[in-house]
Image (tube, rainbow, N blue to C red; front, side, top):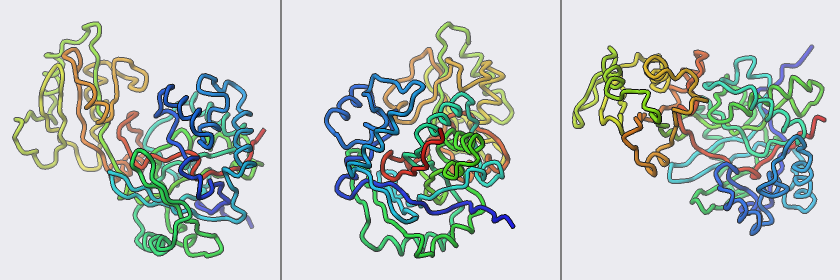
Amino acid sequence: MTTKPALIRPFNGVLPPRDKAHLVATRSYLTYTDDELQDKLSRNPFSYMHVIHPHGVQSPHGADMAPVRRAFECFVDRGWLVRDTAPHFYLMQQESRHGVVTGIVALVDTGAAAKGQVKAHEATLAARETLFARYLEQVGLNAEPTLLAHDPLPELTEACARRMTGRPDLDFTTTDRVRHTLWKVPEADGDLAPLLSQIPALYIADGHHRVASSRQLSLAHPDHPGAQHFMALLVPGDQLVFRGYHRRLVNADGQWAWVDAVAAIEALPEVQCLNLDAPLPSGTVELQLRGAADHRLAVALEPGSLTLPEWLQDRVFAPIFGIHAPRTDRRLRCLTQAEHDRTPVPECELAFLLPPLDFRQMKSAADAGRHMPPKSTWIAPKLRSGLALYDFGPAV
């Protein structure tokens, strides 16, 4: 009789030692400029960035990822990363200006996505999936967890809280004023696994391409036991931090008459124009226009129907502006709130300011099998590389 694989399981993690964790763990390389990366590489020999960029900032990986694997093994040999000798779950907490988020780092069955147990709310690009899968195939590492959310489970939250009363195994604050804390929970203690088994489904909050590429790797190498799982941070959905992702349309060649376009938006039956100080009508969500127009709109959306980013794409961008491929159309830009605040909206652009979504909306879209437009929401926590790693070994 074949045993059904567990959706969630502990693993032998690879972690930095207590005295070097703050030096090893690093933000995503995408958040650094080239100058900042070069400074980090030249001033901090312990940074995991030396594994990500083994030949320096200006040296792309190309087709050969072997140097990344060798750099990782060098960190292990030097004691800058240490393998646990027994399986653990890892409680990870981030405390920042956004609040406190606590989750469990564990392995997730890669086949669960195909079974509907790991649900996506965003589509992926095949080329990026293949690129990530090739990286996993050659390097054999998850250097940071994929962020997955689940329905809150009070018993699990209470069990984690009891574990966190003891001294953390890792505890440090980074220069961006985020405190990172981690507790190891040995599998042998046995109290988390039964509670985790009660979680019926997980929702991808951040890392759609990583999940898809892990699935691609497992299908290509079914006999590689380590490739049948990927590392994730499992967080109760009500702890996720959501921020709005705004849209800007660039009218570089004057193809759009803003007055006519805004009139077409306001003429939609579900749209109501509001004065700046008017209360938001019940059952509507607010959409603000800036730049070429300065309007405040209320959009009536049925509960459980399209989210505002979906509605904006389906009812406005595609039919009115002819934007059918939002991921690649250069006339459309997506900005976080911080990026929007740093960049004034010129009159040749039209900005759409969207309120943040929430876990309920994200879950509803995923349960319905809908894929929201790219960058529909900004979600925290943002996870560091090199703080907890899953070494499953190269497949080639």
